[in-house]
Length: 227
Image (tube, rainbow, N blue to C red):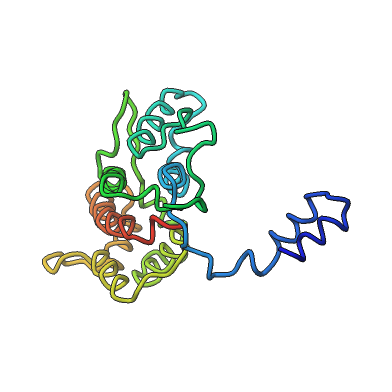
């Protein structure tokens, strides 16, 4: 605080130099501060839609009614846009007594899990004539070596989470990619087979199904609730 205050004074109380110093400092990027705050509903719901490129695919410029669904979903999560609990807005993440934990309780956590699970299904979330869902094949195709289940798990965690997860959970996620014991194809075989026959509807559906199960678990991990 003291060095920033001095910068503020030295620059005739201009805030820009203070922010430049703060936002470019090692302290600002310290990994200690990652994964320490619960995502509020906008960060959780809209943030996940951005991460999976759902907003761009939804053509928001033409389909204005889509925003009504976002409004409804955020209302379910206790963040009704335009209707804060007071003129001060919603409690800040640093405000006692609940701090950022305001957004997580037995009701909201179940609703978060349901929304994510619905977005991971083939049917997706349907509202007012529009369907929202995560398309996983295009998503994982952006990573290098998506055919390697271990690399894919690491890349998804790195992209979607602000903190790492334990090795035991990574192993479970890898097993989901490789499928059940009665499924003949490993993840690598399935992905390469799909790549060789992209017009094969059955191959595409099998690949997408495997990814749906994988992401349903991944996105319901506690780490996904944090930022």
